[in-house]
Length: 216
Image 1 (cartoon, rainbow, N blue to C red):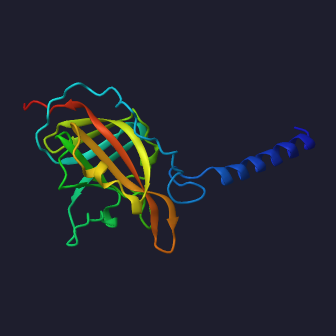
Image 2 (cartoon, rainbow, N blue to C red):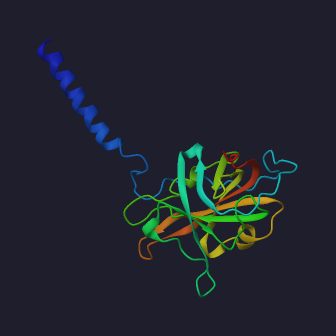
């Protein structure tokens, strides 16, 4: 290799290495820090996606795992209730890698809205619902229940709301059939209050049932 060609190759390698340092980073850690950029809010569809005419009502069984294959999410589920002041408890940051089912809502697959909360991040790492804003209408959500059955939901919309304008009626109010609401934080992060300005909420309806496996 001639000297001029060798030096050209050397400088090209250096430039490529510098580009890699500037552009490559661990998955889930955006260059700007914090959660990934949120999608534009997707408003509720006029007609639910392929909503079945009728599905069997599932018996009560508490959820223990949520699976969203489209975003490679497998998350275990705990449960939370109410504080003394009547507000919903905040999922503990010590277990931010787990979601929390609101135990005063129905279990997934029963008639009505089942509500599951999750953090987007904690002080030192990403959390259970870090990628929740990447879900799109039509994606499937599987909630595995304690009786080993699964309630399958299809996403209707992913929406963003200011925390001071939380859509209480839409999240907790009666619904026609079994529905699911996934709730996390989003929007701009306020370093003074150490909190996010908005909530990201996924609205979904029951579109399938996977029964418990037959006993052996």
